[in-house]
Image (cartoon, rainbow, N blue to C red; front, side):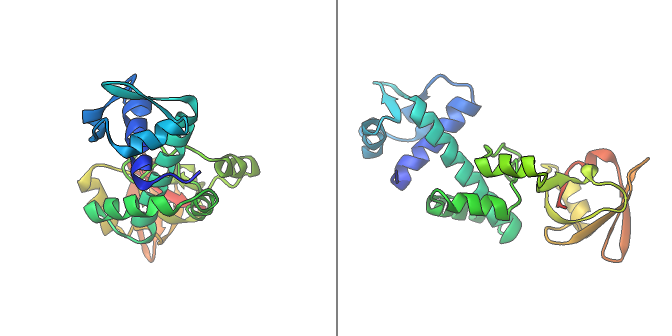
Length: 214
């Protein structure tokens, strides 16, 4: 089932409003559309949503499809920021374009390439796919916080998960950048790690915001 780009965007907005925002339904103003939008008819005709006079709600199949849609978008965000190093409005715009190319199968390959991330760059949950569950069962859990490493273990920095710009700048100044290798040397009383030829010490809270691929 291939939906139009606009239909997928409606499902995405509905997911954020209903599944994450706690609303029972999504009003047209919230979705930024009119009741006459053809994409609503597209979704209604294939049994994904129920269209009422003032709002729309998910049908069971629509909730499943909405979850898949938000998953593709957030995986696209991780790709733009972690791999392509594109940030800000440009990253969001390109992620919105790219997500529509992630048909079933392509999203699995992207998720695997990114080592099954659990959150987007903004800290929002990425709904897990079957590939994520299989990776966990096999012990290949992909990206973990620095606090999950044992002293002596190394990994590749995947991303930094913090909304504190000062923390971000401090870590970047240390060389904590996606793609760089990091070696954990000590975990108590503080976390001491090496990046390149330099060693740094940080507290547990900051260590939890550094995510690495084992």
